[in-house]
Every structure is written in C-alpha cells, then in structure tokens.
Amino acid sequence: MKVIVIGGGIIGTCSAYYLAQAGHEVVLLERNSTVAQESSFGNAGVIAPGYVTPWAAPGMPRKLLGYMFSSTSPLVFRPGLSVGSWRWALRWLGQCRLERYRRNRSRMQRLAFYSQTCLHELREQLELDYEQTRGYLQLFRTEREIRLSEPGREMLAENGVAHKLLSAQECRTLEPALSPDAPLAGGLHLPNDETGNCPLFAKRLAQIARNIGVAIECETRVAAIQSHAGEHRMQVQTQHATTGQTAIQNADAVVVAAGVASAELLAPLGIRLPLWPIKGYSLTATVRGELFVPRIAVMDESYKVAITPQGNRLRIAGTAELGDRQLVLRQSAINTLHKVAADWFPGAARYHEARAWVGARPMLPDGPPLLGPTHLPGLFLNLGHGSTGWAMACGSGRVVADLISGRPAEIDLDGLTLARYRRA
Image 1 (cartoon, rainbow, N blue to C red):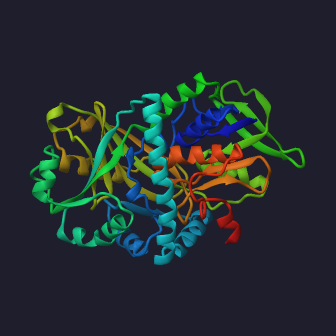
Image 2 (image 1 turned 90 degrees about the vertical axis):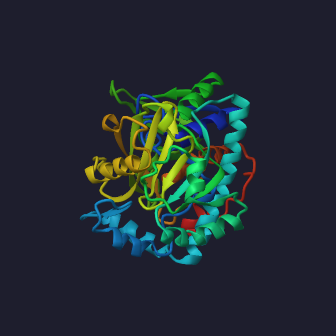
Image 3 (image 1 turned 135 degrees about the horizontal axis):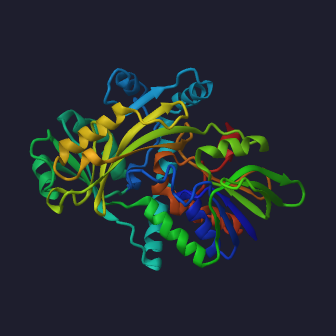
C-alpha cells in the first residue's frame, strides 16, 4: 500500500518509520525544512509514563483560578474573545471529575508504557543515541507539596511504577549539583523514567526511514485531503512552500499527524475535533562545566518546570497556556524558567545566552490522543498527544502502522480512537 503521512513531528516521523518497516510505500509530508521543528522542537524531553496524566484533573479549575494573578503561574488561561478557546475550556472543565480523570489517565498511561517499550526496542535494534539519561527527580520545596503528592504516589504504586520518596539530604546525595541555597523539603525519585533529545531522535529516525525507502518531502504544505467514495483511495493536494508549485498525490491510506493543523485539514471531511493549541515555553542554555550540571532530569513541583541535561546543553521547560493561537514569547513565562534554573543550578549554564522557544501542543480536552481509522476508508488519525507526545510517539506510530497493515494493535485501544467522540 502507498501511505502518505502528513506531519513530520515526532509522531509523524515514528508513524512513517513503522509503516515502512511493515512493507508499505511511504511518503512523509512536512511543511518545514526538516522534521521536528514545531511542537517537538523545544519540549522538556521527559519520558515518564507513570506521570503521563490529563491536564483535566480534580482540583485543577481551583488551581487555575488561584494562579490567575500570579506572574510565575505554571498554568495560564488567556482566552480573550476566542470562541474556540472558551468552548474548549468548557469541555475541559467537564472532564475534571475524579472518575473521568482516572479513566483518561489510565488510557494515556497504557499507551505511554507501551511506547516506552517500543522506544527501548528501537534504541537497541538501531543503536540510537539521542542524548538520553535515566532517572527523574521531582523536587518539593515545602512539606505541603509532599503531602499533596500522596494521591499521585498511590497511583504510581497501583501501576507498579518504581518510585521512592526521598528526604532533602537524599535528594542532594542523588543529585549533588542541586544548590544548597534552594528551599528543599524532599523529592520523589523515579529511577526507570528517562529523558532524551526529542528532535535529535526524530532526525536520526527520519534518516533511517529514508534509508529503508521513505520519501520525505519537506517544505511541502498540505492544502486539502480528499476521499474518493467506493475506491478506498485518498488524494492529498500539496503546495511547495518556496516555489508555490502545486501537486496532487494519490494514496491507499493517509495518516493525519499534523499537530494543531490537523483540525483544519479534517473539518472539510466532516471530522470536527476539539483540538486546541496549549502553549509551552522552554529555554536551551549551553553548560559551563560538568561540575554544576545535573546528572538526571529534575522537576520543580512548585513551578511545574523541568530541567533536563541534553548533551552540552540544559533544557528548561514549563508552563501550560490556553489562549490565542499566536506563538508569541511571553516574558513572564521566560522569567519563571530563568528563576527556577537559577534556584536549583545557578552555575550550570550560560542562562543569559539561552535560546527561548514557544510551541503549540495539540491537546484534546479530555487528554488521551486519537489513533486509528475514521469513518472514511483509508483515513487514519495520530494526533492530540498534548505535552506528552514524546512519551507516546513510538507506541502511537506502531499502533497506527499495525492497524493500516491489517494487524490488531498490541494494546487495548478502548478510549484511544475516534469512537469516544462518536459516543459523546
């Protein structure tokens, strides 16, 4: 079968690779000059399946109200006059009930744990190096934060996720680079969680995909997708970003993995999804020397900011902002990232020279992504992963490749397909 994958982020790249491995003729369309240049580019790099969770959670609306007047808020709601963002927020609010949260979290973690297994298999088979580190340390500034973490630790125990609550001294022993001046009440160590450079992984996997036959067409914008009733054939209209040249490509199947842009492509086909961009921010700073650099990734629980070592750089990432679609750097968010990095690792990197980034993470109000077929023969989805796309990418790509190949998925897809919105 000829399969066109729309979107060259980490989700689309993994989909293209697994489809080629399954023996399909694959074309990957990407509107940028190379893969992983948008949502996948500046993320925290954390792969922590036990902490993959919906943004819609009990108590979150109250937290959001409490954050509204804080300049260092990790959660920001700025809907303005946008009808779309208000509509999304109302649907999100309806998913914040405990039973819905537990159901959605279970669906997301099922996929995330499977994806981690797929990632490890790829790493071994392909001998991939993507600046990966093992271990994740959640830092609590106050005793109150430790108490509030108890429900989360109970869920980790329920799922058999290795973890250990550490004292402040144990945290500093595990990560000696932590500043002695930063307030620290304790931490939660997850030894089997990991981090890695997401765009580096995507680029290396894309090169391997090319070597096994995937045609990667960059600077190619998709104008429309058309379905031919009764023919089980799809058509994709494209336009080259530089030359403006247009083309029509035929395929037996199309995978839509275009992030936030997916909703606009699918609407003319009668598939209207509550997919909205949740903005995130990051800094990337060059390290000064190994002495003050963290050996493992840490998460500041107060500010929801992750600090991740990536080769000779530090990635500092955080903030979830619902509002307009414009990717404009908000200085208060950047200031928060600088503050957290300087609190924990003041001498680790050249923070004053750090490169700032803002990206749009395609999020559905209930949390889990959408994988698999639609009502149109040959049209498949792999979208809506929100801020956990890196943690779910390999598993999502493999699931979609299996379904297109006529094989059953290796995990239960209940709640991960378009059927959950048809039921709603």
